[in-house]
Image (cartoon, rainbow, N blue to C red; front, side, top):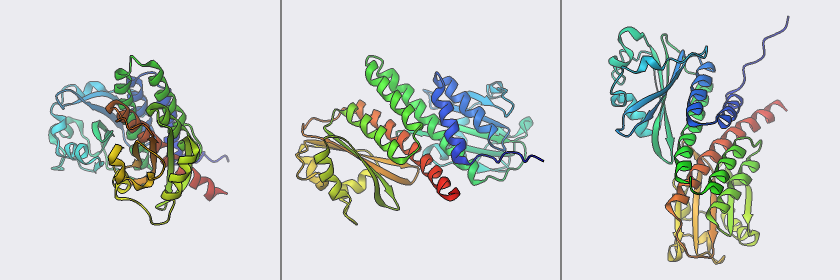
Length: 344
């Protein structure tokens, strides 16, 4: 008797989902695709995407069931969703919440999950991009659910991808007058999501960052167990290798780079004295960009140029988006690499 095929791992399911999101023609389809595929891959009965509106209220934009039916109408009459304590906490902390008795849980709200809706299990996953909340994915079921690691991994990865898509949509509007750059960004996001190795992701992201910023050299480093691993240098190789020699020194890290592991940091002119990693390469400006997913430190991008001109706020928003997608792609690739190594 033929055995049913094994369920795909969370990493493979996430990689497939990211591919579908990349193929979606607009943000509306991205959100519907995410909700439909996420609920189909979990034990929940409904996935609803709610995005933050201008008044900081959550607006339902898609609500999907495993059989592909949309149920957005059920949310039209529910108000003040953003005031639910568990949702507020998820948006502020960037961490997901889960309850198996939402109607009775004081962190949730009876007016949302009580009454005739008969909802027991609820998972709230925040959509965070550039460090800013964009909305939530809401997974619901009428019965109790045991939340497993694969479902959490898939939900968090899906939320990352949707948040990046929302940020890119806003960025694409900002760059409507600069089609070449908008096309470069969109092409980079698509390429990064289809890479099969950590080095491949680094190559795509490093090249795009250098071209967007117009810097002479961009260095991308992946960290494994806290130490530098794969390295890619885009642009002028010689100064990049000099910087790499310093960064790769065991146990060495300046206070500036330690700070930049948590947020994008720029240095112009005299400020470069705080970045000894670039001493001797003639840099006039530099930016250090973390590659992080949640609390996972995946790598670092260092881009620099001899001209002491400040970076624009717009360019910083663009590379923050690229870094978010790069980190998500690196995380997915690493899980797949681990699976391949285990099988072999």
